[in-house]
Amino acid sequence: MLIKLTIENVLSYDAPATFSLVAGKITKQHKEQVTDVGGVSVLRGAIVYGPNAAGKSNLLRAVLVLMQMLNGDSCRYSYGGQFKLTNKPRNDMSWDVLFSAGGNVYRYLVKTDGVSISEECLWLVSDKEEVVFRRGGLNVSFGQMFADRTWYESRSFEKSRFVICTLKRDGIIDRRESIPNSEVIIHAIEGLQQIIVLSSDSIPEAQYIGSLLKVEEFMEFLKRLMTVADIGITDVQWRSCSRDQAVLILDRHRSVNPIRQDGVQFAKDGQALWAIVTKDGASDVFELKFIHNGFELSLNDESIGTIRLFNLSVFLFNLKRTPSVWFVDEIDCHLHPSIAYRLLKEFMTMPNVASQLIVTAHDTSLMTHDIWRTDEVWFAEKRMDGSSDLYSLYQFTPRFDKRLEKGYRQGLYGAMPHIGGEMLNG
Image (cartoon, rainbow, N blue to C red; front, side):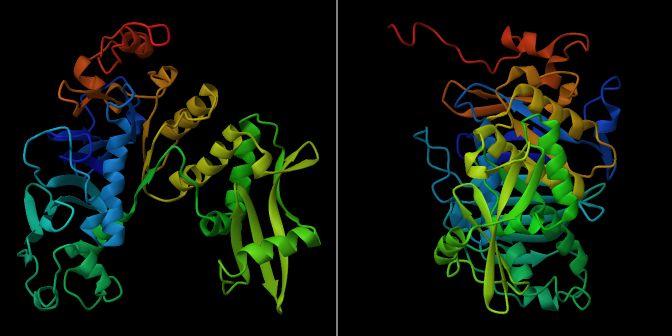
């Protein structure tokens, strides 16, 4: 679980900005949304508001850049990502992440200019911070917990590649039983891999969504989601294509997506999803169809809102199924407020869920005590110098019986656009 994130000199964030999921001292609001993690009370989720260009999406993009660097094992995914609205010399970009994984609490720090890594450190956190490894430039040292450092210190490290990724690449996970104290690092790797960022136009990869659609539990979840949303869909099924359609799809996609061992490959045309099933050299093609009172429609023929809900279904399913941290930009994009409200309300009150959900939104009707604790509502605001700032509603201690939306629209909490003059008739 994510506990705290501090970013500095990343995108629109110049000065250090901290986003915290540590629960405040609140006793009257949604106790079920607080989990004890290593003695720290951690929140299940949060929502971030603010005017356009204030830094809401850049908070999520900053997280995405970190994950792209770690997944790609190169700091160069961050190149050019420093704060640019300044004449000051550019310092290194910095990410400081406090998170839990495998029963441990970790702090992971990265500093880079996008060309080389100047600092990378991992600590195990309990009453105090214990060094797992510490890196300055190309010099890497390992903590006192590693009495036998032979395997660790025999690694070679490059200026743009991460220690944590190098250890993974060199087999620490596959050889966990023979490498001393490897579990400490493996849990940290797994915890960071559980952080996922979705933009408002994120589309699941064809192979991934196709694989999920083979899971009966997901199909039932998808059908229920579409039915409850009241968008006219009564069923979701794979339907065989005509011979002409099959020939067209095979010509387009057979060479692009190689056949897997199970004989099934998935392909997309626009939004439409196809399954190509090959057996004994012959291929049949099926399309995912949405049933409206007996009539079949391709996903290409559905509304933008239905497509958005379908794409979100993947992360909604995984929120329930797998411990993970999901950042979703503009959760209200293309969705009716009642649907967005219902999704957030159900997740935040769902029992026995080990996942977290952090979203941004513009729809102020979602800013309500029905869904959120006061410490789960955050604001992004633009400073005078154009940089972004982050702060929590918790610092205003609004009364529990007051409408948060009304107070926000009245400007009581800041993070509102200051619109002056006429836009169209000036």
